[in-house]
Image: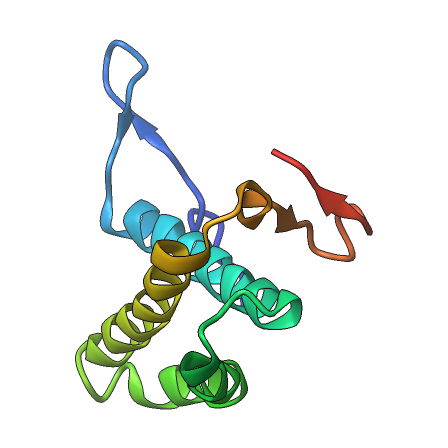
Length: 118
């Protein structure tokens, strides 16, 4: 399918970007991937509370597919609920075990291949 304007940025006379629904959806999608990657990293490195570990692993295993399957039917609520669940788990880890290295994000394997330090 050819979508030539899927990532188009519209600008005003001064060259400032104009927010559009498509642009906001693109931005939110990037944020959702970062949230999932942070949760995945927290699980891998053992930064979560013991009680949150099963929920985080379940979230990583089930939620992406569930959101894809249900988001249209729920009017966007599925993605909002999934985002809230992941952020709640990360917030509890942040509150109790914050470490500067929690801000380390992994670049996609096809992009870098190694961890990217901020």
